[in-house]
Image 1 (cartoon, rainbow, N blue to C red):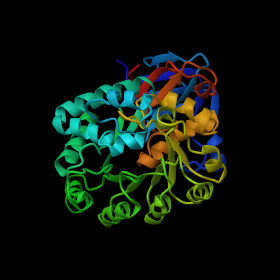
Image 2 (image 1 turned 90 degrees about the horizontal axis):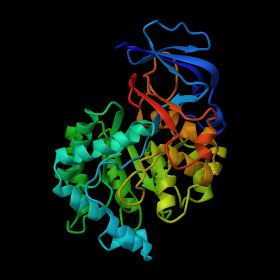
Image 3 (image 1 turned 90 degrees about the vertical axis):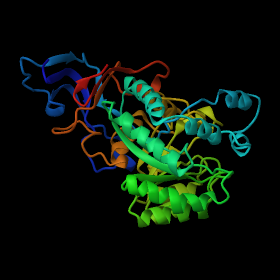
Image 4 (image 1 turned 120 degrees about the vertical axis):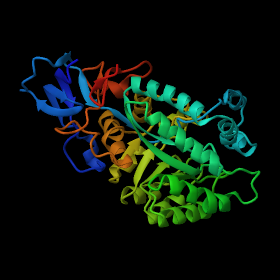
Length: 404
């Protein structure tokens, strides 16, 4: 087979102009080229433009005017888990709230119990199934968190499973150690155990992995999270934080002060705090699938971008608050409920997510970049935000290989 692929007659959204991460007005600039050809050789983008000499042995994909853009980057997921929460979903339908289920020992803890009974191979296998579904809908790079182990051995088991799955998937995975996801009430001083035992063990085996926590009523307090993050920062780990999903407890300001690379959720963030985040070097990650599934509340993406913020969006796929593997669905929800445009949603789900995860060779379509590309069924990218349900992605090229 040829090592060359040529996508011809395409509307190519290069996303190539501007600083990274995009912020404020820059988030509308898709830098399109109409009638363009993208030549891919040995997994790399080697030529781009309206006048490209295509090798005779290249495999041709005729876009017929359809939109070609960088592969989606799902920068916040909990895609590694075992079991399900269908019983709790029925409880919610009968009126129980997410926090009530969590405080009653359900929610995250029910998944923790299932994960503890699963092996590394079982977790990796189920994760790989989800990753392949995500790939079909255009996700070529994603972040995957641990956080359903809540013990040193089980958190390491999850990170091992994420690593194993990444070795068998054509896309890219950025692992995150979400060791502050919840608390195991059966452990007398769980926070102390996490900081003094789990964090050092994670650091020894995964010394550069990002550390994450969930600050919320019923989970980690601000002081507990700050203690964990201070210890992790001293070891050189990047920091991310779940904050302001249901209550604004003050973790956003603490996260900025600690130099966190992102604050994720932001549904309950007050307007003045949103401006503070927008004017900082910390990115905001909004998760509209959670609002859709849990309580109908959404973060204010419009105000955040207008204040100069750098926004990423993601599915937050997990078995409880966001059972959705589809970035196109996340984009459709973001356009409807975060107040952002389709162009802004595309930047938020590609180049900004790539920057957040530390991948410099993806997220734009330029010479020398890794060939992670998707072709939509549409000739106008605004359809990506306008339509919902089904799959807007017609073709996926991942690492220079046609996978769909």
